[in-house]
Image (cartoon, rainbow, N blue to C red; front, top):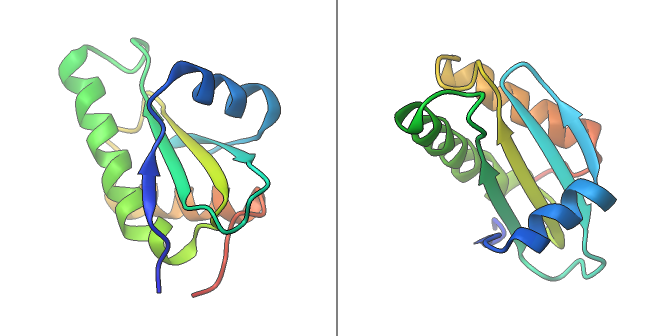
Length: 117
């Protein structure tokens, strides 16, 4: 059974993941993972795209694609009790979906946040 996915919404939550968490960059995204310490808590995910990615339409497309990747992969394979921040990169909007999915899976594995079903 997959874990529930909650959203990060407040700036301090994003900053905590950036300052005290681990980071791994792939061509399609940057993943930051912060271990909250309570392994039973649901995983929480935040999404961000800076103006470097493009105008508002492109940034929104990038965030939608990241949400779709998380919806497909995280409930089955992301460890609970962690905060995940996905940062869009310049190539995120135009990158193939399968490649973005592989990027996310690779980042989870490298940051020891991957769990088998």
